[in-house]
Length: 373
Image 1 (tube, rainbow, N blue to C red):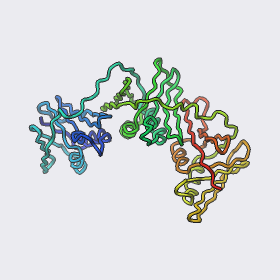
Image 2: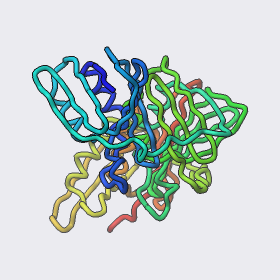
Image 3: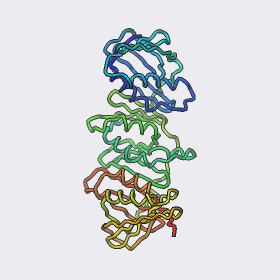
Image 4: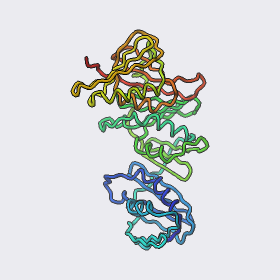
């Protein structure tokens, strides 16, 4: 097995699949890339048992089919240091030689039979979505997923398809995001929970392009996503997702409309002077004025900032976690946002000011924190 390929092409291919490599692998073979050469096509695969991702590259020259597992870190490290030039990789049994310019590098690979088998997708439902929609949905929801190992369903993103919409939901019990598109229809309803790690990797390698179509195949245990030269298969999170609609308050008589960037920057400033343990910022709203207050009694530091806003409702004083608030405001894009409230001990709803015909519907929920007097 021997082939020649551009160093840049190879490095880009390795980087597309390296995101699933784990740091605490139970099997040594999971620290390798699997190389499979067939005619002029090179298939590179990486796996962590839960997720398998592969990329197909075209070689400049190929001599003899073959398959070998190559240590990932060593190969990545050498490829990152090379300029753009043809690289020749020659494999004899498990001995690997890399020729690049005036350099010759030798390392030992492993037999491919220990590498995890790619799951076979059977009894699947198929659909196609554009890559821009998926990347946008992942960017809007992933930050709100939880890390509680006792509740694995909340460490993933709920993916629901109804007859007239497609919905992505993430929550960690303190904050919740529901990203919905109303311009999608499907005859077969789907409700699955996608794991966080492969989604984080996908949003980095998937082009944010409406022209790129992603083919999805879904069954009871796995999902397969295919686009460009990449195929990713990952195991779904097993379990029942919490009834998120039940926790979204529908009666919110108080409505605050404000410039998103002004609020975000003000929270950033005042939170510097707030408690590093509670991250509490106090919102005091009366008339057309929002007063933000944060204090840290341990260090006798305090900050107050006034903002003008448009507000309908009774005067209210409510506390929020400044870190969660910043994450949400950072993720939203419109110039103005609406915060809907009902009581100091009830969740606040953040939505974007949008046109009635806008198919994108995003709602964020944030739980209040107990105000310290």
